[in-house]
Amino acid sequence: MAAALAAAALPLAVPGAAQADSAFRVKQGQGLDACKAGQFCLYEHENYNASGPARVWIFVPVNSNGWDGWNFKGRPVADKGEAAVNNLAKYDVRLYDNWTEPESTDFILMHPLTKLPSLNNVSGRKIRHDGHYHDGRPKLTPYAATVNLNNRLGSVTATRD
Image (cartoon, rainbow, N blue to C red; front, top):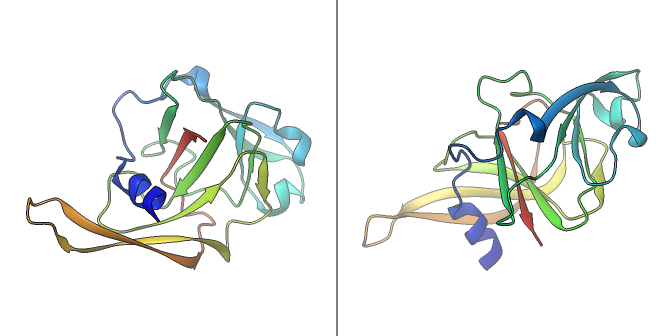
């Protein structure tokens, strides 16, 4: 629960956070072998583009502080993606439906070296705004839920596990 709260407190859209082209690229591909070791990959279609070669968005963490974020606003990957592979051996990856720090969001946590053939009906978390603390900070409450993120992604973060 504490980790989920900490993740909820992280801004999703950090200016300059791993937005460099060297850390984010797209290619045509199909199947699990389209995502190499050291990469997080988002597939255009379910089952890793099983229906035929299609777009695969590739993300590679470049920040040495153990946290990277990719904001999809204004990029062709915004609101796309139906499958994902986390081939990052030392990073947890969170897929969010928002591209800015929200008052509520849905997200999926992918541990290192895991894969999801679909981003729908996945065990994830919902974070909801439940008022404010006395100092004015928003009170965010995470809870476990089945989430549906196919073609709804706004941002991705990667944190060292």
